[in-house]
Length: 179
Length: 155
Image (cartoon, rainbow over all chains, first blue to last red; front, side):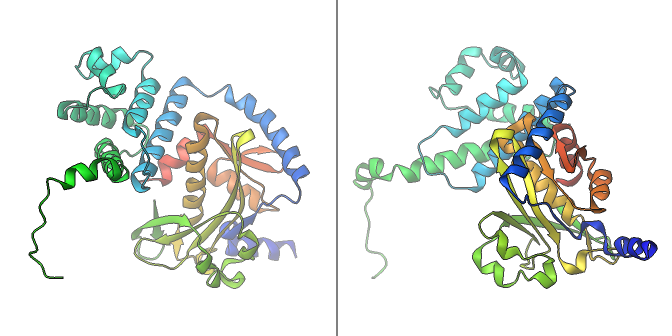
């Protein structure tokens, strides 16, 4: 009887599904408490390198999510992600500036949205990220560019009320196409 | 992420996205083993091959922010993808990886994904996904999650 049951399981595969819903909040809390005790012990074995990897992965996921979802609000996503990237990898931002051969002042201006990043800044950032992510996870080269331009598009579209009246004065619409 | 055709070895890019109300007509207990309508109010995702609409796997989960944890409630592959005669490989692995990415997105190095399988299925998850055991609860934390993502996530 047992033999028959085992062979059935092999054929069916254990992976067809799992129902692990808690039957009550109490069960969930009790399991969570026991799990947390074990996790806190295991967390002691997590290395600094693994923490950096986890944060880089988190950043990548957030950037990809931003690129895919239109967020029409006035927020500096590019510099927020860039700050997060630098602070994950470096203890001093000036070291990042040195590694991509720009001055700390220029980096600070970009991070504080006082200057737009130049083409050379973007290209160096692209190569830097490519190398940093090499042993962490897949990272698309174009990601920083996509974040940057996505933010530009979102900002422009969401602030039409501000710029449109003035810009429209400079646009002459000829009736080339009949209504 | 990809799945592999077990017959041809061909890989297919997959998309995992939220289940919409119109999907429930197709998500029958016969093909997906559980009554998924019970999960209507939960965070619920489906897996399909890019360019097709057929659902090959489903997963529902619960975020528990106070514990930096995402708990897998229900997970399944479609009927033709179970057992040794399965059509595609990696469906469950991709779904667990997807949930792991949600956990990392939310909690970074503190991320944890848990599940509580009943009976003999537990050993399978321990072996295949290197899961930790706490009583009847299985979990993967950042070390295992990083390995899992490296194995399954090619995006």
